[in-house]
Image (cartoon, rainbow, N blue to C red; front, top):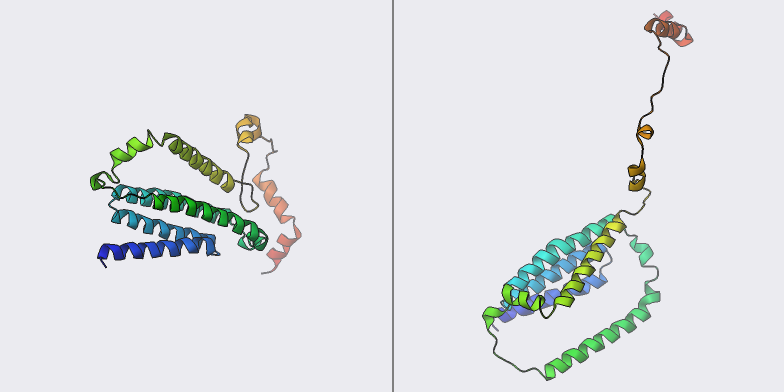
Amino acid sequence: MEFKTALFYAFSAIMILAATRVITARNPVHAALFLVLAFFSAAGIWMLLEAEFLAIVLVLVYVGAVMVLFLFVVMMLDIDTDKMREGFWGYLPLASFVGVIIVLEMAAVLWRSFLSFDQQAVNAGNIGGTKELGILIYTKYIYGFEIAGVILLVAIIAAVALTLRKRKDTKHFDPADAVRVKRNDRLKIVKIAPVSARAAGAADSALPGSAEVKEAP
């Protein structure tokens, strides 16, 4: 077995194991970290296929930005995992049915593509190039690219909205009330009658406690 083939099987095994742990890990933070490991393994497979640009983008964008955002959101939300697990077995039949349908659809698509697979010589220099990818993205896949951008924007706005929700352990204020505040509401001047130092000392000496303190020595 060649060294390149051994690396491919190693990265594939690690990616499958990490993907399995993503859906089986009890702690959401651990699941996110296993997803990071799956992304790194996929990037290694891209490197073996001589698609360096795709591998670097996968690490920088998904691991360096998206997954960090996921981790921050998971840590800020303070999710009660015990409460989420209460209805797990109730949703299991429906989830299993949907999972079986997805697996059958993927198997039908992949099996048809494998049957009609025809090996053709491909120029290795064009695989993973920025120019070729840019031409394909902004011509053939422009609608999918725009839809993906809108979905990511909605996800970012939802993450910010969830972290800024009203919680008992955090202080918050209404920005609209802060904008509508007036000058007189911020500062109020109160007139107080002046008290001299002699009157204050006389008032202190008239107290019973202060007299007892003086007679103690």
